[in-house]
Length: 184
Image 1 (cartoon, rainbow, N blue to C red):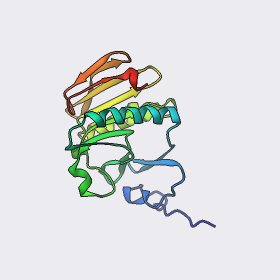
Image 2: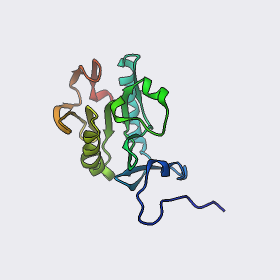
Image 3: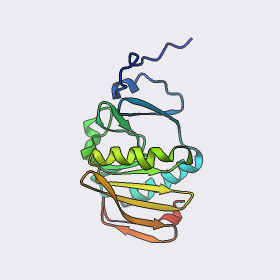
């Protein structure tokens, strides 16, 4: 018999601290404004796209930046979001803790899944912008596009729309070149 999962009292908001009591059951747990969000881990296609992009970015990233996955970002105890990929200052990892601080994160990337596109396109876009994360990329593997968003006054504005087969270069968060066709 398994022991019950500790949860907030009825009516109380979920916090980042509550996440550590949840089971490792193949679900991804996030918190938005005190509400628990549960979704299954990525399928093979989604995971493959995310891993290819992470590998490409990692090869081009300078040593003082970390390109990673599977670490959450939290601006407040009542929100904890896990981007598919992030770029952060490397020293942020040395700090430890339950989540990255938004001020250490230079870029978050989400690979859009048909099952939860609204979460990436609306909810996370808003939360990451308000938290002050400078860049947000949305990869749509089915359309084979990358939407590059830049934070302007707490709101993301589209800076570029990249399509597969087009070589794209950027200066931020570091100088890089990519062809989306090699990723999805």
